[in-house]
Length: 236
Image (cartoon, rainbow, N blue to C red; front, side):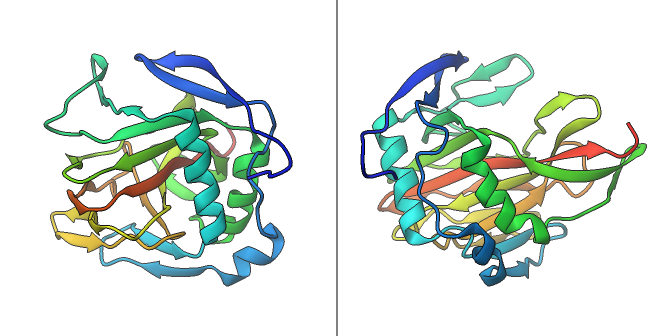
């Protein structure tokens, strides 16, 4: 985080009562060189179709900057997306979150690092889809002891008919806690969070969209950054 001045932020709007923040500077995060960083990323395919891990997407310092900034914004009780809108369902999800409407200066360096590893030319429906960036609405999740996000499927983020997200993008900002793995069904494969590691998988109407859960944290505090990989349909 920029250390020469205090980062200011304000509530830009609300989504079902949850604040959406905007910062007074395009990029309050101080990144390591993005041009060098992506060459150090290691991709590992998980034993779940379409799920893969990218190690060392963020440095420990970058993870901490995100934690410090979002703690200053203030975490609120998370909601669940339903056909009737966003509602609180503590039996399914009882963690807290922050939403940040970021600029490309924030998500762009991350995209530059991971883009070489993102699936290209994805076939879905009547089109072939090409990735072009991240969803700028970053969501940060905080899980304390006894908090979790039960089994669910992720929906897509649609801008327009031929412009939507196809992949969930999660970065684990901490790993000094117990419990809190990401469990995939029906295989029951667990992804153990590693600081700075990303977990990606298809979502929405893609046939490989997996049911998954954020397992109960039993000790410590877990932080996660969540976004989506955006795609456009070719020729549309």
